[in-house]
Image 1 (cartoon, rainbow, N blue to C red):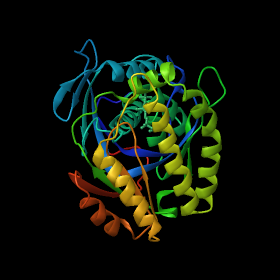
Image 2: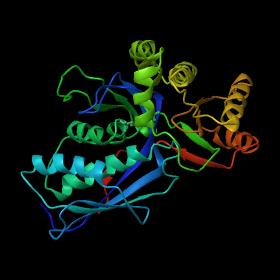
Image 3: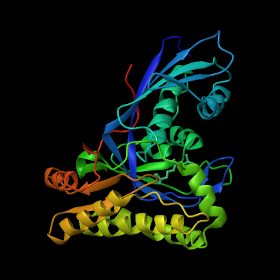
Length: 325
Ligand code: DP6
């Protein structure tokens, strides 16, 4: 246990094979595995201050007070592991739009558990940190690691093997990422609620879940072999299949806007011209274009000119969550 404040930093991640659906709500166990890349430019920095005067955890998000319930539950688990510990003030800052389908909960919970482990004096291996981050948000389990990451769906009822693991370091295949922001406002139906609705009502949900393991294996092979074309094929397919299942929920969820669709066509047209790029899209209207090294400038220039694109962000692959002070 240290009395000094701890600050940790973690990158957002983008799933190439999507996580969408849960097999256990209480433990937040995903229904299937997933594969992602951790980003270096889109980060959350979380500063934790232990305060014996508090009677519950407090959160500020980008300088404004926010609901601390979800982080409080994860901090409770960690206090239990440490045999007790004080409540904390958590100051969390994102350097990218929050709640707009850019996976801010992933970087936030990854930074939180890494900082809290240090603050509470818990010397935990990465897979245990990943398990704790998962309790906050499924995708956060992956942001513990850098580069290319696989989330294992696991077999154990207690979720102890439902953790992420690194596949390839960022510098071993330095893909570039261009994010086309088509609407920077917060999304209307968050991923947790969207998943629950899909699980309850989409006639395609079961076949979606049944198809994921094969995609995870194909993405793993593509990454091991640095096979961009194969990765492009399986990643676009996974994103579109996830959205097909989401669109078929009742009422159907349409996370896309017109510019999202135009960006998908733009990326497909570039690929037909021989440029190594593919798209993916999450629970919001932004399009993420994953580029072979050297292609980001060209892809970004094209996406900037798509009507409805407000802004374009450039980033690459980054490290896993770490304490910075
Ligand atoms: C579309 O990790 O936000 O980004 O576990 O309920 O917090 P919870 O869900 P979350 O879902 C992410 C969904 C996704 C796909 C992905 O990142 O794999």
